[in-house]
Length: 274
Image (cartoon, rainbow, N blue to C red; front, side, top):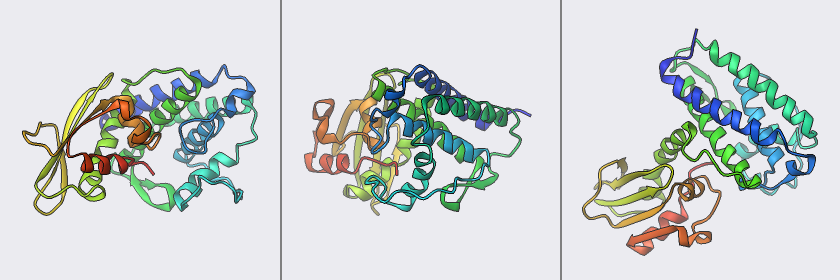
């Protein structure tokens, strides 16, 4: 059977990004695998190790039995420890070992996608032993693959695919976290609105509205009297939302109109990825 229609967009986005990753790292010489990326604490090798590891988990492979070093400064939570396991176990793998394992994993996952016959709402294992639906798992793998593709592009100075299928998945995933950022984390007042005007390869305008009870919601309609309007390009938006850069490092790429204190609070809490 083929992938369920509601899963197809995620499968296509994942395929596009994973093939781009393979193309990016295939020609690298050994030393280039150690280049730092915008993902805190991770090199090019670490990013690819993470991608391989997560796809192996989607395939149901057992997790490696491995003890993490105690001096990994970027590992600050149980979630981070969980993710680091698949990375650290491959830290001494050579370039040919990395590319061959990536290729083999891609082949296995592509076969899995072609034969997928589970309903999108079927529950499956999620990180840390939790459960998630197949649809959520597909969406998050497409999101994760695109973000890490961009990490690699930044590290290797090969920009591109900011408007690929994975970019649209990433946009939707990141926008889901925006009401919480504005209403709860930044503390926008009740009965207020904040507008986000994003331009570039991927353009959109969204308004986060805070109701009388302080709850946030998001829609695509403009607001006539927003407390704040934040304008930025798509690359800056995703980098801020994924914790790849702080707003204080790119002030020239963000335009603020309205309440500057609230804007600063929103930008300070903008990262929504773990």
